[in-house]
Length: 375
Ligand code: UD1
Ligand code: UDP
Image 1: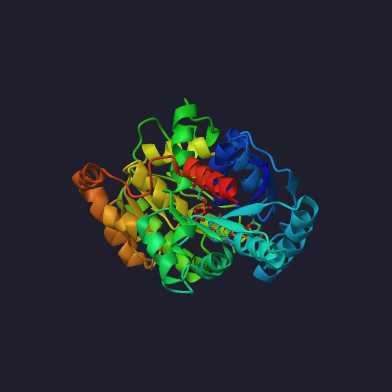
Image 2 (image 1 turned 90 degrees about the horizontal axis):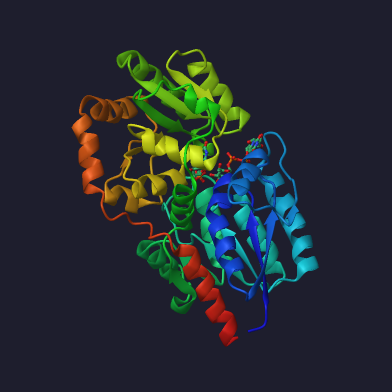
């Protein structure tokens, strides 16, 4: 087979973490010339994630601005990615997930009739406003994509319903599980000084929140619930690696900045974050990736959202959808803190997690190889 040129596009932290194993798997095969295009929708957080996998971008568009608008990201990515696609003229591009980088770079490829492979295709919350704008980004990207690499059977069914041809869909598992296993294999001890601020063996919960639809009142509510928990459980610690977004950080700092048992820190390197997930009592998060990772390490995660596009995590038992109202968050968190056996119970019943066995990237590479060999 003739060597095929593939561009893998990444823009934000989760795309880097979840695309990295795909790049590594494709580069293991001699059949592909793989380039990484970083849009730089995230600056520090993207580099931080790529560094962990010893990867660097072949081109970084460096588009990030403070408090960037969706219009700005979309237009800057279409223009920048389009120019790079014209220069490299790839046989295909791969995008991941549901960010504005994902959708806008897919559109730039479509305008050039370059086939798009969508990694983590077929996720649906069923509500275009939740998460916003990710649900629309997913639907539009799947419409553009030639291949849908679906993490689960449910995602495959969603793609079929939306008209993607059966033969273009491959159920692979989620590449985040590949990244997680790679990281567990290659990490010894956590390195961040922030983690040392937690007293040894102190019970702590891990918290992350960043979603656009939670900005403002919902995030205030989440922080108030955390404040009440700290008052109610004086022995409890909280580790909160804050997203770099100033809109999110200012609210978290206002509520929790001077609390004794709270470690507020910058985003952790991925291995340190994996350590934190593993070592916590449980997690509170509105993150997509964290729901998947928590299921694989059997850690309860209270999902700070009204809907999730990952219902598999809830069926599995590791994910508990609690919403963004203060009282609901408190109810679920106190249930776990008052009944530690509930945590053990959840961990115990979470045997077969739904997001794959850590070979998703190999399956993607094989499927592309098969396609191009028959071409
Ligand atoms: C983006 C994605 C979201 C994804 C999330 C992962 C969109 C519309 N949103 O949301 O789907 O879940 O990333 O984290 O695609 N910033 C920095 N340094 C960084 C990263 C961000 O300073 O390394 C700040 C900048 O001020 C930037 C702001 O955060 O303008 C928001 O970044 P943006 O990518 O627009 O939105 P996120 O909320 O990060
Ligand atoms: N993560 C990380 N360091 C942190 C917080 C999160 O490496 O301090 C990882 C986490 O393990 C997951 C990904 O970042 O793989 C999730 O990113 P984020 O929550 O920003 O995006 P989402 O998954 O919601 O799109």
